[in-house]
Image 1 (cartoon, rainbow, N blue to C red):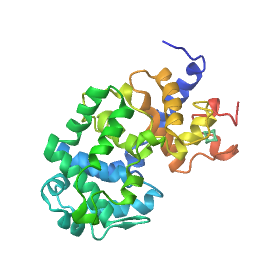
Image 2: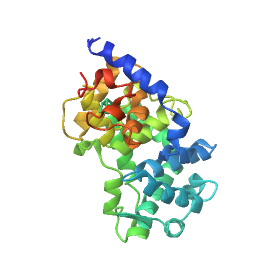
Image 3: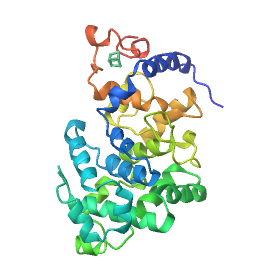
Image 4: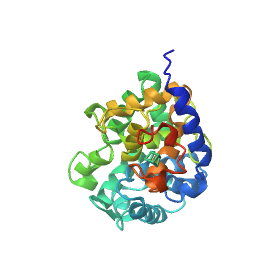
Length: 290
Ligand code: SF4
């Protein structure tokens, strides 16, 4: 097992950040709050897939749209995905519009999820089967994305494949993307349960997860020495995760929620700022201060 001397400095600082993060309050500014309204694991899976895939841009802009979309899907988004005809899926999603995403993209995502639910029984069974076979989160995620995009989408798009924008919502790890939103979905499904993440997919080990590398985690990760890489790529996500694994081999992405919300909340100044950095638990390891 590799050791990393800096780990002994980082671990207490990150533990202090975690302990000082008010998770229930932060969840109000996070899409993960929405799937917590469901009890049935399949509803949690489908709601989580929608909420993670559509979580781009500003949370205060996309979250109200996600809430309205889930309201339009009724008490069981999984039942809708499994039983509704494609035209009905478009109808259910018709009020949804957010930047470049519209009702047809959402209908394609639901159609792909519904096809998996009918074939495997749950999204987790599908992903887990791929993981068991391929023994790699990256490879299993690629196979999962392929399966979501595999059904005949003609009734929705007028062509065999899904909308072009679905590729944006579901980037393939083979193309080098950090796949932040898909890794976020995996974090929700695999880690925990801890009140934030759901811990539904028991056969996928938390130690195999890759950090959902958003701009905040990347930027703060560079401040504290988790990576030197400058691009938001899968390689950088793996680089950050490799260092996090040296802090916690069994649960490397446990600091992700706290790190990302240090940025989302605007608490991190992203520069040396006497007032805003004063109470930051990462100050002893932040490059602006050491
Ligand atoms: S010390 Fe300041 S710049 Fe560094 S991580 Fe904390 S808030 Fe951000």
